[in-house]
Image 1 (cartoon, rainbow, N blue to C red):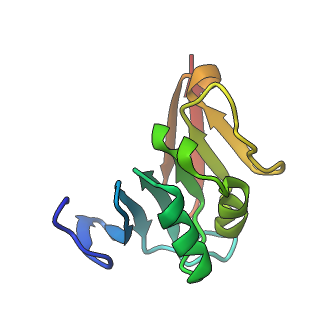
Image 2: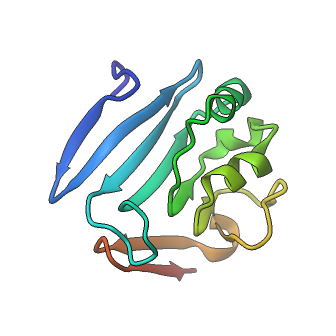
Length: 137
């Protein structure tokens, strides 16, 4: 999807889709969404994948108010470049985050953080109404 533009959607089947939320100089922000609403009143299951997120793209998304709510945020190693991580996570307000690092770099309290170094393999699944998290070491 390197040729995609912001707003590009890919139908994944069964009511799921992949959407390009934003493009930056080093990567993109993707959302995997499912149409069925969650019991908490959300508009559906949404997982935000931050691939190559850099500080400039992060600041632009916050200043433009373009951060949709997401139940799960998935961070690659490049997330270490985000200077305003706490502000970003609070704006998205996920139920949990998946993090590959040994440190949490200021992860806000009250939001579950699953780290690859301590939790090992993390499997998250949803049927659009419930979410299950299983970690294996």
